Image (cartoon, rainbow, N blue to C red; front, top):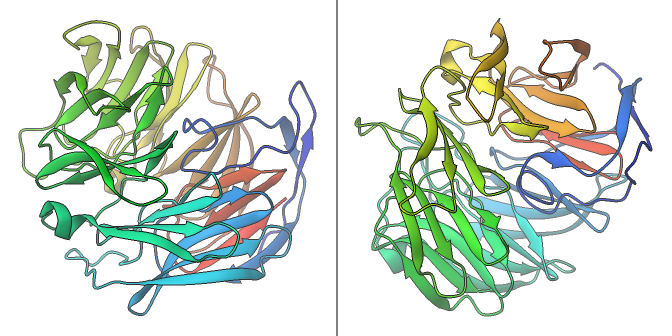
Length: 391
């Protein structure tokens, strides 16, 4: 295996930021840590179970939700060594109808001394972050009569204040639970659940991208302030990329001839500032934003999507790589950290002037679909059977 290390250079930001949820501290794929230069060493590597759920990091522990046999496992590991601190199991009977991995899809969320995990079979569980003790559990499929989706439940929970919110589908499209007890606090919409994870907006609202489209609601009451349909006419549509909120606008992107749109969140009714299927239509990977531009994947995963840069204001394409292959993308300082699906870690400049690759390393084999986590100078990356730490 190629040896690799990242030396983080303190250029205007400090080390020490955790990565406690999907897409990082602000759920936008942007690291608060400084710039870096590639050099050379994998710190540790260990075998793990099945799943596409991303690792998260909080207070010196890596939390991973994965599957072994008929159990989904939330495991806390020492971030420096990879050794297990505790592990808690949740029984599962999920079966994938398309021959894909049958492990969890949604990243854990660490907040307020608790870890929240959402299984592929729709079970939401709250655990004590220090000990792994189960605090409460809700089967959303039973409570809300949710029918099995194409690829199981994949939306990561969002914690805001005393509420943990989730796309569920069934008799309620979205639901909020009390973080301490699991009690249902409110429900909203009748939308089927999408695979995209919700994001916070203005501290009092949340933005959801359901299978039907955009939903903006008040997190205290569940009252919906605005909705906008954004999905394909075909029943096979998948809305999977997390919305990218920038100021008072949100960028939505989907595949299946749906396309991308920028929506002004202050306007009523909600409607696109611009939209189209020719700018940045992502199958599942969430783009990242920097200085007026978005960087991400355009095209279906199985068709070899392009890596692109577009102007958020207009949707105009600034550059495109041609057939690049699927993967995920983070923004660290002024650089793009691209984890390709075939296990190559690629570093490129985040600039609209053109695609400029700085380095590329092979760090994993197999299929890498989970997002990495970057915390305290270490990148944590998993495939369907192994987790590696790259400092």
